[in-house]
Each structure stands twice: as C-alpha cells, then as structure tokens.
Amino acid sequence: MLRRIESKKNRKKKLLVGGLLAFLMVFSMLGVILSNSTDDTLEYNEFKFSREESFFVTKINGKQFYFSYLPQNLLLIEKPEILKNKIKLPMIYLSFNPENKVENLRYIDLIRNDLFTIVDSAVVSAVSKESSNYLLPVISCENATSYVPVFYFNISNETSIIERNNCLIFNAQNIEILKLRDLIVYTYLGVIDG
Image (tube, rainbow, N blue to C red; front, side, top):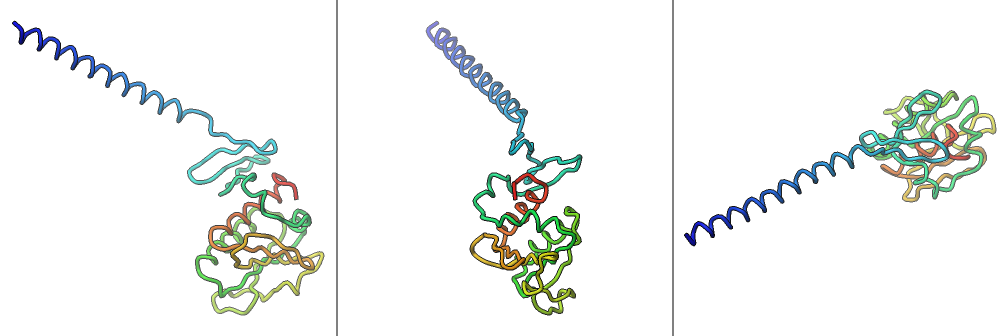
C-alpha cells in the first residue's frame, strides 16, 4: 500500500515535470516565432532599410540598392564636400594600382562594376601604371581636371577620402573598401549629405 502511494506521488511528479517542460517548450517556440516576425526595418534620413541576408536594402525611386553598411556606420569617415558634385559630373576616371594584392583588387573591381551600373556619369576605368592584367588606360591624379575628376583607390591601413586638385583619393584595404563603395553610393543617391 505504501508503494502505491509513493508510485502515485512519483507519477504526479513526473507528470508535473513533463507538463512544465512541455509548457516551456511551447512558449519558447512561440517566443522564437514572434521575435522573428518583428519588423527589421531601420531608418536613416527618411530612407528605410531592411535586412536581406548579409545586405541592407533600400528602395529609392523604385529601384532597390544593396549595401554592406548602414549610413550611420559610415559617418566617421571624413569626406570632402565636393564628393557629391564630383560623382555627378558627366565623366569620372576610376583609377587604381594594378599591382595591388588580389583580395584588394576584387573589392576595387566590385566598386568599378557598381559605379558603372549605379551612377549616371560615364565611369572610365583606368590603372595608375601599365599592366598586362588590365588593358586599361594609364590615368593618375595628374590627369584630374575640374570637369573630369579622378577617383583613385589607394591601399592603406586608414580608411579615408582625401581631395587633391580634383583627384579624390580613397584610402582603405580589404573589406574596408566596401565602406568607401557604400559611402560613394549613399552620397550619390542623397542618403548621406555630400
């Protein structure tokens, strides 16, 4: 008789523990479902950004634009005031050293491609010295004019933009180069004031 009473108590304990575990599992799942359904929209200067995989996406004039960084994450990069005007000129030379490391060249090639497709200017790719890998014209900062600026991508430990006689020198390396890409496109689109 004593064993029956103890076994009933054990069953009640097991049912109580099992019920508690089931309760916790159900509400944990609900928490995950509800937290994933919340709106992941971020806003900057009245532009709305959503997260898609590893990119931030915004729609401007009916077109979607993809960015690696949010605009507020780029505000510490000093940029010359003339960037906005230079990026909207009819023609831009985009030059780089073809002897840079391959990983840096990949990011620079990405920027070249993006600027070709995003900006209305005629973007002319160039190299700062002759190369058998890139059959492009040789253009340096010395070729920059007020009507045809040179955007020169320089590999540097410091991420910055410097203006010298109508030549904008974009300093960065590796993935930091994408910060410059995003900053240029944000400035061009008017998301960040130039």
